[in-house]
Length: 482
Image (cartoon, rainbow, N blue to C red; front, side, top):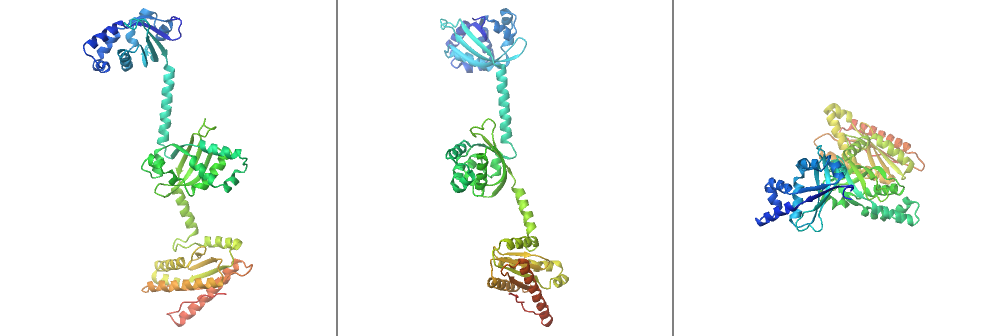
């Protein structure tokens, strides 16, 4: 059995080592580990006291020896280099009275090949008093060790990629959510979207079931947290408000088996600022049955969203006055034409004598007057009413759900604000407005209402210039209404 064993077997005599240990104890050595590390030659002396008696065939094959004598003559090639520390630990185990010791260490073949080995040693029964027979079993675990090193390297690489990723990464456990969805299915629910509409509290329950397993440093930076611990303690501040409908859609996708998802969502940083992110959600391979490992990546697209919002703002606003522009006015007019609410009143306003101011003071003077008109109209109009600059010196107010009387009241407010503005700028150019207003009648197209208000504005403008010709001081023109 010894000869045919599939593992390497060594029968050795440790009695010389026991005698050496007894000598050292008599000399007062207490801590063998420290004693050996102070002088490496003491470890070599221990090794010389161990006598190799016999090995089996597997040992000769493993270490590339021709026979026992060949192996004995080259033991210095087998036991060397990085096995020193582990050999010290083996000796310490015997010093402490153990009749069995084990270790994972390194040996070398006679051809210089490095072997990772698992060693198990036992003092054979009946030899405990002198250690004269010790059996060592050596298993070659080189391939396993290589695989373990490769696995560790892969894990370190994956951890490094996770930790140093330039996007926010979340490793999460969705197994609780999977359980909740299973419960809903057992209740016979088929239309999950309708179920969520009827039971919105289910979305909250699912959000509370998410367990965050790990996050990377970019997540801490993205959400402006001082550290991971603080962020994980305040995830309720991150996932709230606008996130809820997005998460509901995520649940609908999961219900239908879509384990990889992409969407734009809104989160919040710990200081309360909105963080627009592009979310990618994926159940990790091998975890499709339990959803206990889910990788969520969040790419911060806040800057892009702000740029888009600004471009949209520019597309719908006049840069000089801050009012809406003609494009918005046209779209809003068409929308109101289709949906109301009725009646709809329209006010068309023209800034008088803009060309004269430009000729006299330059375009900077004219721009200043236009900005002042913008200030007046912004103060006069409240949502859902809107104020737009629809031409160089022309403005329009759309007043949904406002009848003739309400329209007249708003025009009066504009005139009052105009007077106050001119008083404030008494030392400069005075703003003069020509105003025309109209209110929709039954089944009347708003284009007709705008035309009627526009014509009344031109009538007021002619009246203004007539008065200006007679009296340069002029009076504020009145609005013409139905």
